[in-house]
Image (spheres, one colour):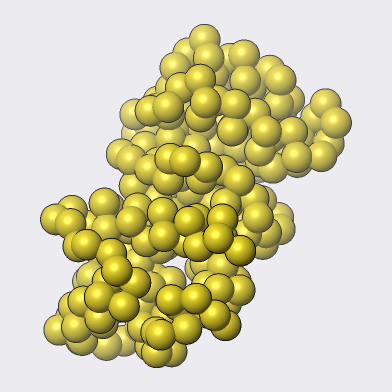
Length: 219
């Protein structure tokens, strides 16, 4: 796996690079500027880009914009955004019309090295990795009306865990419930939201994300 890193904080950039390198992942781009990240990523064609939202040259949402442009030019590129802010709007902007291979984590999650490396790996493989806090906010904004209002509190929790990219086993461990209970809740969620279940776990997650994106467009 080959990764490009866009982060203007030198210590964090080098720290992320060290974590990935130690995990056997090749870091081919290290950049502190969004424009430079765009150009280098287009040149090296990595499997995934890990980028901050706020970067030079404007110190606004330059990193996010660069990531979105990279997704447009390289549709198979995985994108994992690291941010100091829990902003669901950034997630929906990034997802656009192609939810596969998208990740959004708060920077504090980098400290959980195994989880961070797993997130990078999942995104590179076309899966998803969304920060739990962001997912909860996304679901919370949509639960007041629309189809999500049909879900129970437990089903919303399961849906949030699914959107983070967890397997049924991961959901069970996260929520401290049985595997059978998770399967029951997943079945109920798909039935209530009108989503046809598919075989692979990551495709199921993408279906949920696609639903959330479509639900926002209807508002």
